[in-house]
Picture 1 (tube, rainbow, N blue to C red):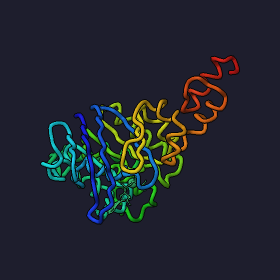
Picture 2 (picture 1 turned 180 degrees about the vertical axis):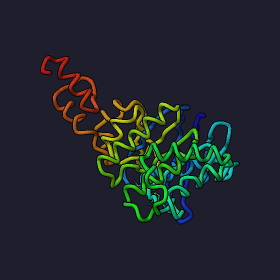
Picture 3 (picture 1 turned 30 degrees about the vertical axis):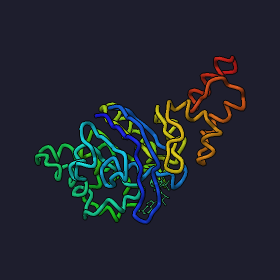
Picture 4 (picture 1 turned 90 degrees about the horizontal axis):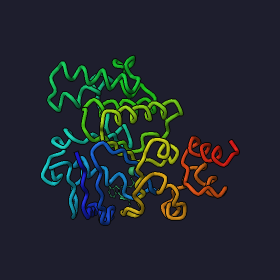
Length: 269
Ligand SMILES: Nc1ncnc2c1ncn2[C@@H]1O[C@H](COP(=O)(O)OP(=O)(O)OP(=O)(O)O)[C@@H](O)[C@H]1O
Ligand SMILES: [Mg+2]
């Protein structure tokens, strides 16, 4: 289902104006990365999509639902949100119970819950840890539990808030695979990230935010090519993107594959 955000403004009770007129549309099945400096408003925006925050002005529609008119528990049928900090999200005594909580709460039958839980545990490679207390796991694996517990809800829209922060290379590859599988299933995925290489490798559309506003929104290569504008929100394009520019490539490249393709075309490969 489509996401439509119109002229969204949000001010925290303390007076911080975190969003200053954000408008954007995300089509069903699109995979979008959101980048931008600390405090740009990325998490505040994400929390509006599942109704944890309600607009001060402007609106958000998730399909035919206006988030102002729906409860958080209702919106959970359509939007799953993996918290930036898993410790804000996890509360069960073992991984299996934690992952089953969401789908059970959404009213799936016992058999459906079991199927969804097994699938989510397999995707996140947690199948051997169902009886473990999440707090006995390393922070990297706790993040995987947080991801599994959201995937198990089988929502059409999934939001990841900084999924790769503090993760080792193996877990980053696991998370990239989860996102790939969700893409194949036609899910809408929105990922907030400071990890520009992860963004470049896994997303076709990139949104850059700065000070509560959208700075850039477009195809990954176009956005990542805007080195000077990105610098204003403290985002550095991937190293190979910058190197390609220095070498005078006409096209913006964003990963090794694209970089090598240009070299080959120029006869250096
Ligand atoms: N609970 C809160 N109460 C008051 N102000 C807040 C709260 N949460 C965030 N803010 C402020 O709102 C602004 C946007 O914060 P937000 O967390 O959305 O940014 P972000 O882009 O997710 O940053 P980061 O990359 O550090 O996670 C910041 O100025 C922040 O200090
Ligand atoms: Mg944040």
